[in-house]
Length: 225
Length: 225
DNA sequence: ATTGACTGGTAATGTCCGTTACCTTACCGA
DNA sequence: TCGGTAAGGTAACGGACATTACCAGTCAAT
Image 1 (cartoon, each protein chain N blue to C red):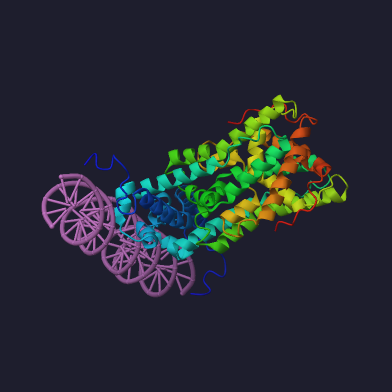
Image 2: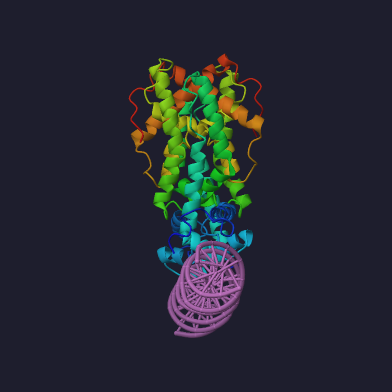
């Protein structure tokens, strides 16, 4: 029972990794829609086909499945936040690009789902909550704080608490628009709506509402209702 | 069965309204801690004493109890956001005071609990989610948008999208600090921490990070970890 | 004090769900 | 082709839970 599969993947039935991915996708649909506690393994099987045995063989338990799901989704979201190749550009450009990616991540079904489903379970899975935070929103703040510190080192800004400012910036993307999407009260923003939200947030973050018109960025925004 | 209690409250056993309040308080502890789906009526009775019959007589069902609980908590949070008596002051003062109240509300156990417990149930109780949003975060944005529009009318600022800016402002108070508290990763901020967060957010909102030092507001902040 | 009604407690009911035991089937190497 | 192994499927088990019947205690008016 040890070296048959060591040579290659062998592609048993549906390849093992594909099976795992299929389980995770079906689990995401149900967990993110219903929440952890209200989700039954049967409901996942209903969407997936097959047998409960498959899930228990792969993940061991409902907890294990949920943990793997959240962990994976938080990890993939993180990957889009790398700001490589942006260091040479102006702070304004970097923030705009960072904001675009941040908003896209926050509005993605995966992170919306994690957001919805992890909140009431944070007490039950403290380590998972910490992992989600540190891989996701916390890492975003960290990366942005570095960007701000570099800008400060270049003399572009004079900001003492770069970490605090970074926190406020990422918070601007968890505004009421985001909350409405999380609560299912409205669909995710269209691309122009998203771009307007990013432009507005970056404008305020850089210049404040006293100076936001200097850049002319507030022009041409659409109403976000 | 119709006119005995019409003459006065009669103070039957523990007064009827006190009973209802006691149920809601015990329900809040359990629902907000465990989430709706994972909460059993038995768990509430364990903290409350008495019998399940009492709860079913008063609220009819688990759904009814949860609905009443969320509705009540969203409503009480709203009451602290009235900005009466602030209209005469400067925009900076108004925003600081508004921010203090907003942060206090967002960090209160009641709203933290509602926040945690309503998210995965938004699909199950769409009307409740809408009521929560409109009574809470939505109303906060509305009130602030009015304040900004008045400031614009006075010529203090030139801001086209007051509603969007207000959304960004309230978003700054749902930053990573707030998320960490919601996830149980850290305790609510101490009064000085809260004041520092408010001061920082208002400074950025008014002047941006380019101009935040003009007011000297970024000085003396504490590190927020 | 007594009656009558309502509140509170006990326990049952029917359902749902996580998990596992056991059987069947498909794949792998020879 | 054949045997062995592991995966997939079926169905059962044990527990939890929302809800309700039914019983007992208690208060108010007479």
